[in-house]
Length: 364
Image (tube, rainbow, N blue to C red):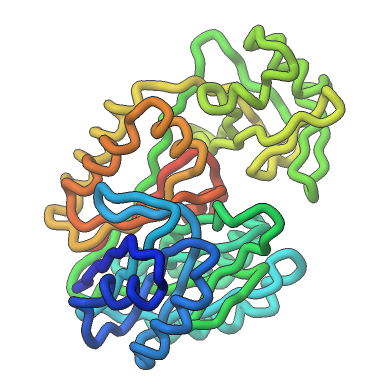
């Protein structure tokens, strides 16, 4: 697949577009990343500049190789050796399935498979409802999903994504992207694991709408965490960067980050947990070694990456900017090839919505 990435830190929208697109000509698709205030304007202007290019856009902190900011512009142009189709899944909070026919038509047009095609998506909310809908549409195609939840918009603002220059709140913007001259692989990286001597718990009482857990093992969840980790109940949420919860499915761990303490007993999460889910409290492991292993794994399977697209969780960003590792992470990933991405409030990979994770699509 052929692509070109343009970058600008200019705060003027038109000047930023001129700079970021200086070396972009005849794109077939655009992935737009910028700040919330300029997303609509920039997406509209880019559609006028490249009317034949299909585009999706997302706002928030983003990065290109080792540069990152919450007020910049990254334009990733897909220029050749690829097929793509974009679309929008609306009404995520009520009934995204009403637009499932749009995605099915994209799947028919692209006619891809798990080895050469990925569904790249950016959403605003209701991730579990979205992932269920996406996977119904994808069926047995095997096509992987990589995406993230928009994060970083101002307080009181409405999160929104763009598709072909149009702004959509309560929605998912997707690009079904097929590499016609190679393959695509997806990866996820978590820096956490089980703690020795700490057992699993069963979720026993929840409010699914609020992503709220009242009890595990029929006991107040905040008290269980407090007793197990020897921290005050009012510090349970503050411990999330080093000790989040994890949902255990076989030998896989899907992180569920604690968000808010309610009524001194229950917790809300960034990921929905269901009754009978098996969960445990995780520990932060050697994240430097883990990321180096991710790089080695990618290189062992994709010898010459042409483009990497990732989403990093806001909690990973806070942890790694706080301890000085984020720049190293970006440098490690950029050593593989051109690497773009954004900071999300949640991440999606295949049929899972997860937290505190990096998800990556790697194109040959």
